[in-house]
Image (cartoon, rainbow, N blue to C red; front, top):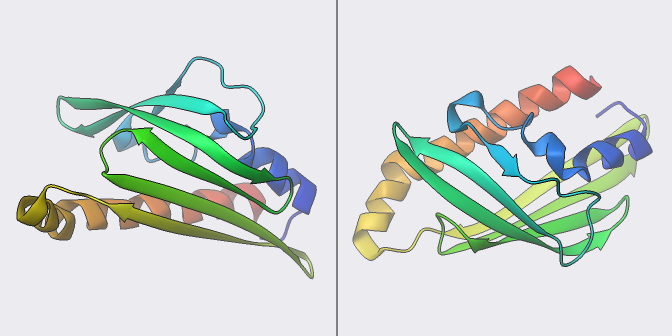
Amino acid sequence: MPADPARIWDYFATPRNLDEMTPPELAFRIQGEPGPMHPGQMISYRIRLGPGIWTTWLTEITHVEPGVYFVDEQRLGPYKLWHHEHRFEARAGGVQMTDRVTYAVGFGPVGELAHALWIRPKLERIFAFRRTKVKELFG
């Protein structure tokens, strides 16, 4: 991203901005006012998984190294496991941001089928949306 590293970090380290970075179809909303990011912070969201299907997703910010990386892990939500690492590396003219997501659906063969047909494609659309939004915001 061709932008100031401090500006990029400030944006991504502000949990409230996740609403803007999530496709409207999920109707993603943070519950409460989470304040500045810090290790141990619990953030609760409401998301729409499909027509009339809502869930609460609770994540914990487990690691933060300002300007470098942070990790969120699901404590309650739609996945058996969710570990999302966000890394920021200063480069000439901007920042390279890398998301690394480790997740498991659970539910045996039914979960594997749901993953292949619905969950993985949906996650790919969510991260494609975020790439587009990042370009709009930071060039």
